[in-house]
Amino acid sequence: MIHIAGVVNEAAQFARGNVTGTLNVIEACLAEGVQRLIQVSSLSAREPELSAYGASKSRAEKLVMASGLDWTIVRPPGIYGPRDVDYFEMFRMARWGLLPVPPKDGRSSLIHVDDLVRLLLVLVAGGEGVTHQTFEPDDGREGGWTHYELARAIGWAMGRRPWVIHLSRASLERAARADRLVRRSKARLTPDRVGYMSHPDWVVTNGARPPRGLWQPLVPTREGLKATAEWYQEMRWL
Image: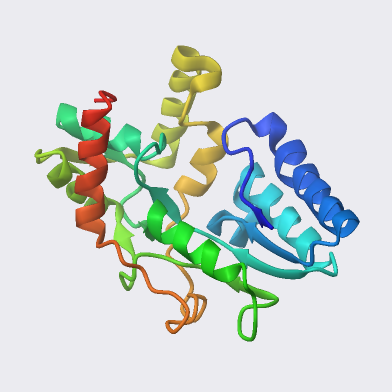
């Protein structure tokens, strides 16, 4: 069983969607005799005090660990690729030539959706070195990406050289309030997201990547970003 569903945007639904939802999956596995569970979590679970979202993912992980099932937890970093609506905002702003990003000292890891899917399918079989493990997969870039580097890479994918502006936490909070006023429930920049966006380290943990003999990322990030930009354009999202 691969449990990938969750709530990412509505803070009022985090407990119901991410915690109770995970408990329901565990109970269903136990009732149906399903022994293996792959829990898709988030890097934000490493720092549950920063956001309600991260706290909900951390609580869900604890339920999985106590379930008695044969489990593996996967904590993806930022996931990009076709149909993604979060990084899409950066592609759209890059087209305008201006790209606001979180504070200057931050770094983060990335993974293409295709690479993540391959990992999840490989993990289904379980086995030695996989059972009762928590993995943090990424694109293989040591030290991750600074916000500036990622912004410029997305700009390159869009055929632009955007002006990159680092926003303070206070500025991000004001932007989140403005986004809520304009897009209401469809706002992508929420106050809860500001909590973890302002954190300086969302790079995968050394030693937490999946074993190289089991899985390695195949999508070079710049090529993946370029292909993602082309998909957005072909689908007329941009």
